[in-house]
Image: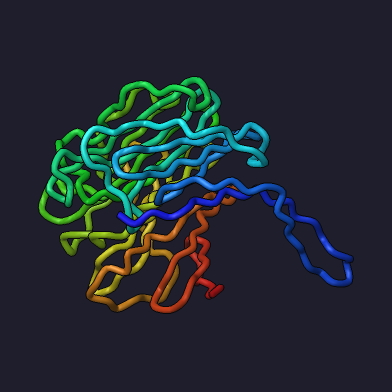
Length: 289
């Protein structure tokens, strides 16, 4: 696998004269690590970076908001790790834990694969043995998943699941900083028989603990983004389409976008054809690129 340098930069942003209305960025520091599929998380001034190389997942921490980083702590994952095309480790942090999720397999290549969750209680210095999240063995073999957490310890994982014919969206929830996990929950099954088979899901949690899972659907010949919401992590309301337009496409664009909460609003960004769109759920989308 071809590797590249993951460049981690702490950036200080200062404003120019008000008449200019511009922002200029200056680089405070730069540290380079070798790996693929980087992912970031933060908890206050603590910043965590994870990335992969072969069957090793590395975690790098910063205690000063990303200005400086410690040396990588390496986790050797049993089997073959899914890496590339949005497949790779995901990281999240709570007030008590740092969590890394990765999909790994004995055979690899889509033949098998389980979603593993690693937890650290000492800011990433050491890691407990992994927990297998998916209840049905090998059902996470597509290798695409999402992870998020709140400071108070609510953690949500979402992944593309293949326990039945077709691809579905499943989730699991922890309410104790990743120590214990719920059973798998079906968030969405498309009436077409499958969601988009190789676009990663995204997940967000609001201040009240509500969950939003975004994924690319396959419906009526279109590959559009949909969002399923849950107030308890157990049952999900019918998924709602993000935006009003559609992308008629008989292929996978390999991109699932990103989703966040802005107070009570669910805000997402995603690709359609040659454009990038911003959307607040329930309103028309805005092309931004």
